[in-house]
Image (cartoon, rainbow, N blue to C red; front, side, top):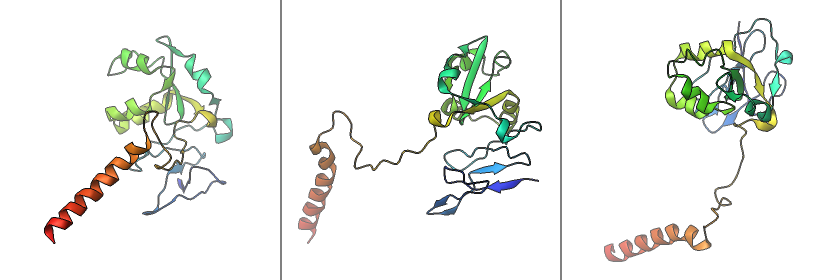
Length: 181
């Protein structure tokens, strides 16, 4: 029997809450052994929960990104997908897209290329057998960084670049108003 867990990017016990303008959104699931599943950043799909019967959350191995980076060869191939670490060494030769695709992503984050391909539910379930642990909290790629759009500036941006569009819109509106009325 599964139990839904609610999360606001930080767990408090087994039940946490995600409050967003559109309501309450389940962002991961607890299965009987408290193994989480991940909901993509678009909240539109659930990845299959990790199906392990002998491992509990306290037994899940945690890897740093530095450890994962060492496994970047065809004969030792690890990837991180949705902050979970997978050893795909044995699977690389069987991968329908070829081993080269996996080798290009080895030793690092592969969430974006994995999602871009649009893997089937069968593929998502199959990958669970290669799950070996989670990425360390400090290395998680999905940590939210709250930055105001007004504080983000490019290295080459000046104050005039940020004002150009609003000033242009105001001028067009003023000229249009002047000629229409």
